[in-house]
Length: 324
Ligand code: TRP
Image (cartoon, rainbow, N blue to C red; front, top):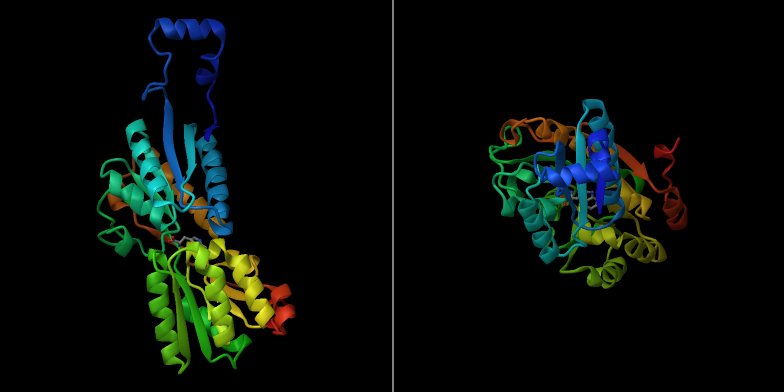
């Protein structure tokens, strides 16, 4: 799907018959690279509440900033539906189209883009651990053609909230997908937190979305609470996890507000609308000529605790400390 922001008069007048004819005579019937339009390829890893929120905010901010800066930007918006083959073909096409910048939402999309070009600037959004997963030199000076925004996950704060809301929960189920790079580090931190608090855990490491329901069911039978890292595959099936946990009357602590919206009990994390906007601001800088190599990765300073009051009521947990 292609979206034009701030379509300029010049581009519009090409559509009138006389101008089209003149344009054809001049040999510029097809959109050339120097048509005054900046071409952006946007790839979203998959559809789920949080990635959709990021994309919506990012597109709106790009449109607003383009108008402000007097830029004409054409965004080719693509969704890989969680499929590695799609990621590769979408990114390869962006490169052969000669886009001016690639915007990639979530780690697998960003890694796919980074894998196909070392020249075209890539601005990523919501990559949890970009230094490890995108091989940047550092957050402050990425060093190559790749920079963007990162969603830092305050794992300790999530477990602090868990200890406050359900102090008796001592055996946690850790539910994540083995193919999600963003989950790996968060799971390590979660285990360290639980070890530090003298709590125990059972892991359910799934390999694809179809295993989410069964894994959630097993954990709900064995554990007092479930923890979910920043995992796209589990997030997509969050309502199934929430239903299962509510039935078993156990709390689910998650790593993003979207998973609370989708039925989890509580989370502490960043605001993904702000993160999408920040990403768009970086895209504008890049389109104006800034070099990703020296543009620091932006992280989010504000962390908010969010709770789902309906879920809390359904499982009998008092969340009034966070709602009043
Ligand atoms: N941080 C994730 C990644 O690096 C993407 C993400 C953003 C996400 N918001 C989320 C994952 C909410 C799960 C739930 O891929």
